[in-house]
Image (cartoon, rainbow, N blue to C red; front, side, top):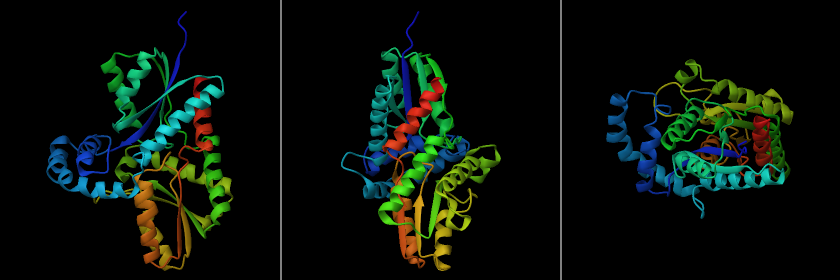
Length: 325
């Protein structure tokens, strides 16, 4: 009888190799060429992407990345690698001994390279964990597209168990609540907590994408765990792109409006991200603060993602273990 050897493939979105325009160009080209990300015909989108966006955006994005880049590299990569290592240790401590690998939908390390390592280790049962608590066709489905392409290229056919989401997993909500309480204990509680999620086009929702509903469900579960009343929190969406209608309410305009109406202090958390990245550290933590204070707000704070904290590792460990039962 063949021995069952279990592997875990963690997948995050990805990051450029360096905070430079030269590194951003191929990364953005790969990212924005994915039909899961930009749902337009190639004949229409590629001339815009190649002729306009990739000539202008890499330099602007590089400047943004430079603001948050760590000595060890991109925060998303640094934290994701740490999650991989700590989940590996968690499995050993619990007598599981999984082989945990990390891949990125875009950029390095690739999903293909991660699967090659698992194949070489003769892993024959694999749990794929997209590090996106809420399912979206723009992120989670893109992961499984890439996994399918890579396994076909490698002719690798392990028994595969897929985790689509963990947006209301009890351990995950507990970890988020503990993160908020810990921040409050150290810094005090603001007048309002905003839970801001990455936005997606409203058209994507109308096609059946469950992301919006799962964001609301996550948010409601978290504020219930925290015991917040309706006037003590908001759930909103950030990072609009283009001119189409996206999920609402829009976070930054909402913060500005509330500041003008007299809101003095706010704390923002991004529960849709497993680890901190450009969007949370630059757009939310920096740009939102500028907008809020310029509109009259007095105190703005960003509460970090779970990153590689104990709560994150315990939740992911229990998630994988539950899938294998």
